[in-house]
Length: 162
Image (tube, rainbow, N blue to C red; front, side, top):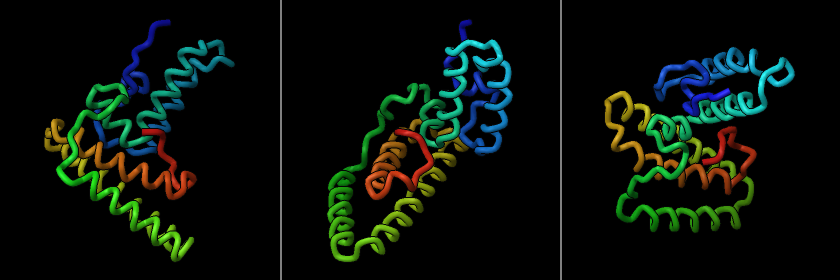
């Protein structure tokens, strides 16, 4: 069976950034019901449907799918000074963790979650405004925050790999 690799097409969802998790879940359940290997479907088709769900459930991966880069790099440039700012931030976080322990970890996790929400909102606004060209740079900045969250505690994130 030859299937599309477009996650939106596989799950029968519109090509839009703004998809809530419940809509993705329902579309996944509909798509997987008839192709599950236990019901006579093919392993390859089930695997493709699972990958589509994982892609569309994660806002960063969904944005990449909309841009058509298949989840590879984002290709967007980082603003001048961004990497130096991230290094300084990481040093500050490490100092706080050494000095304060778990209290600092919780505070920095909350900070990172807030920043991730802000990046997601900016990406959504860019797609709504038809400014897809600006999305890759925002995704790169978002990726740094997500990696920071993962370093603080991988168990705090429900999203997939970037």
